[in-house]
Image 1 (spheres, rainbow, N blue to C red):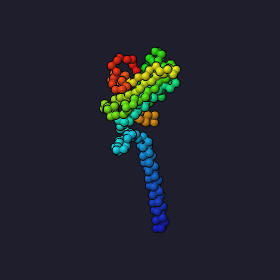
Image 2: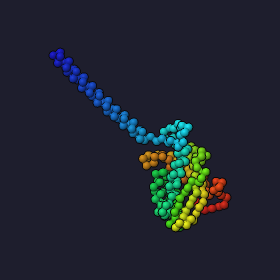
Image 3: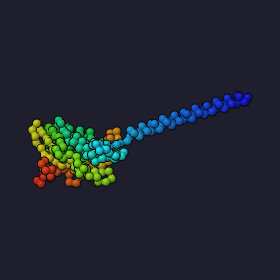
Image 4: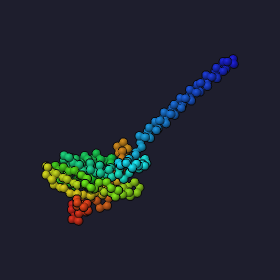
Length: 218
């Protein structure tokens, strides 16, 4: 009877150890899944120049990244390789996850205005960053609470049936804000929120200074 009792105790202890081991495996699996999920949702902004090293924090956009975001998205919206009447609306839609509702509505209104004025049909457009007017610290100004003012200087070229109809240098002051939208659709975590201050201004290509001669909106 004593040996039988010891045997039952051993079996019960082994069963308990198996249950503990199974619970630990489930806990390890849950922790591993949580760790992998945390990494998947972690957004790190790495500055482009790492020659001197860098200290970065999670979800902390660097000025270089804010500038690059504004340039890439704004440039893509105003790239009309075939026909402005079709390309402008498509580009606004494609960039919708990188725009605040207010700026998307403003761009749509600009598209309607240009369409009524005959400025889109058959028109090809592109924006090229002006040489010597690339990223500088002075071009990205933090305004606080996840808002930045970014200045982009572009050479704007427009053609109709291969004939140049506009070649101007324009300075675009843009407002960039944090975006809490779907990270899968907007990995930057940023959005264009419209123009800052008085909006776009024509500039002298040689000096980069505002053109004193009044002109139509670029």
